[in-house]
Amino acid sequence: MADASPKFRPPDLLQQTAEEASAHGDLSVSHDGLEFWQFMVAGSIAGVVEHTAMFPVDTLKTRMQAQSAPCSSSAVSLRHALASVLRLEGPLGLYRGIGAMGLGAGPAHAVYFSVYEKAKEFLSRGNPNNPVAHAASGVLATVASDAVFTPMDTVKQRLQLKNSPYKGVADCVVRVFGEEGLRAFFASYRTTVVMNAPFTAVHFATYEASKRGLMELSPENFNDESLIVHATAGAAAGALAAVVTTPLDVVKTQLQCQGVCGCQRFSSSSIMEVIRSVVKRDGYGGLMRGWKPRMLFHAPAAAICWSTYEAAKSFFHGVNERKKKSQGYRSPSV
Image (cartoon, rainbow, N blue to C red; front, top):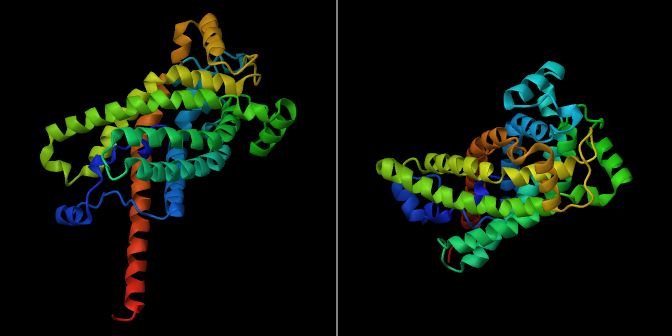
């Protein structure tokens, strides 16, 4: 998953007191302290909105990364991949498998954000600007959310393949389970977790550098437009992190689509085995296949997911405040 999203935010820009936020008129503050289920709902909404908006780009990335298969040989570039889908399948072809994405992204992001927020609260221990705590929280959240998302991500990618033999989500789940067993749904889990570790590290470093650069360029607008600053820095960080981790994403796609539509089948889920196979077959350039759509996916996805998540948190914060005031009015005077 998930990806350049709010999961990577360095909270030092958001950890303001209510008085500071009110004084600056800043409505983009982090509303920590929400109930556990509210974090889950906010994260779920953010995940679904992000992946739905960027799904066509994800489809092109999958086609390009699996193009070594005979059924995908026409997708030799981003332009050709798009032209091939539109010519043979129409615009709806870009959305094949979106049902699996919805079933996986919602719960996975709910798990991610709730685990992230709670782990951050526990590990920070009174220091809201502790980057190590935030990184560790991100790793814990990634391990948990990837366990939820990987099975549906496997189904999604198999449905996204050109000439996919599956009729839909249910048919894919039943056939994969019957023919390959439960293990097939988690073949790429280890790769996904290993991929997200450096993704998180690169994202954090780039985010901080971009944030500082934006502050130096326009310090007078930082307080007034902090959400724009966060979204812009997140987009830059997401794009770079996506490019750097593309080889592992290629491995993930190969493992998830193995044996389908002519894609090569592997004897194990070993990352090195897949890398050696890709390099032998396609050269080192094969490990970077799909980097353009992957970058185009993660850059705007970060801004979309960030904005949606913070908006949902703001909504729940308002609900909680109104609830507290209502309860206060009903309480007898002391």
